[in-house]
Image 1 (spheres, rainbow, N blue to C red):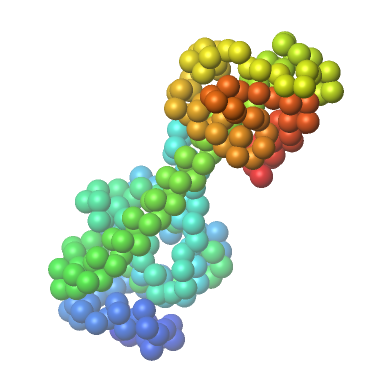
Image 2 (cartoon, rainbow, N blue to C red):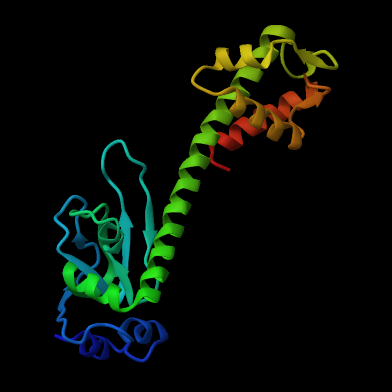
Length: 240
């Protein structure tokens, strides 16, 4: 089937994105149209990369499930939208993620060689989808970095709470200003598996939040800040 005919059958041939796709799409190329029910796996991570999908109706969720990698999911935009193009653009021979139908879906399958023929004829669209995929990857990196940073912050806060207990008790039993006399290098070593730069960044963040005080490079914790440390720990552990 011709892609233009498949889009017309799906009622999306007049939308702006469809016009952008069809502008330089090779008319000699055929697509295979398939219907999927909610929850169907369209492409499975690790499967051979034979087709790129063009969503005609419905939505899909892309997710990664390989052990040792981050769980990450994003939903497609309104049709028509591409799926499986990231792996093709990376010149891989297998799908790097799994694609699951969200609701009833109708998809046009385009062979990989025909996809590259299309991209050669439409460099502007090639640049647009490459930029879109880079934005998705950057969001994934920011999410992963945020998760790692939260775990590091939890460990720093737990160390500071432990220090309060060892040196001055807790809460109202703390002296007016508890001076953290351990050096940043020693703190980093005591916490373990964390860099000095990360410790300094987290302490600066805690200072901005009013959880600790830093004066002329010295770290202080007041009684009321001990309670703020407890609240900050709870918020981090709850992902707030």
